Length: 49
Figure 1 (cartoon, rainbow, N blue to C red):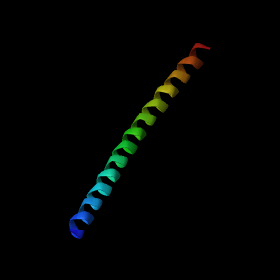
Figure 2: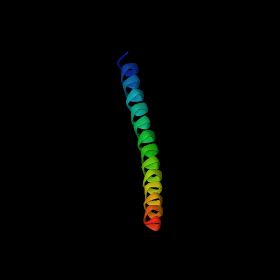
Figure 3: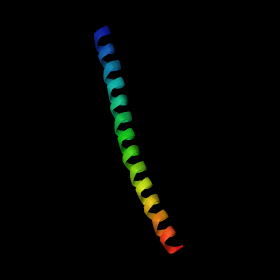
């Protein structure tokens, strides 16, 4: 019984860590896209001025 409980806890922790890793990767990709888009917009504004 103790072994199964430990296994459940371990699997829960691993799934949470995996979810956090995926969300961090997605956030990093989104922030990169946002930065590049903002840089492009800044360049366009400077060219107009």
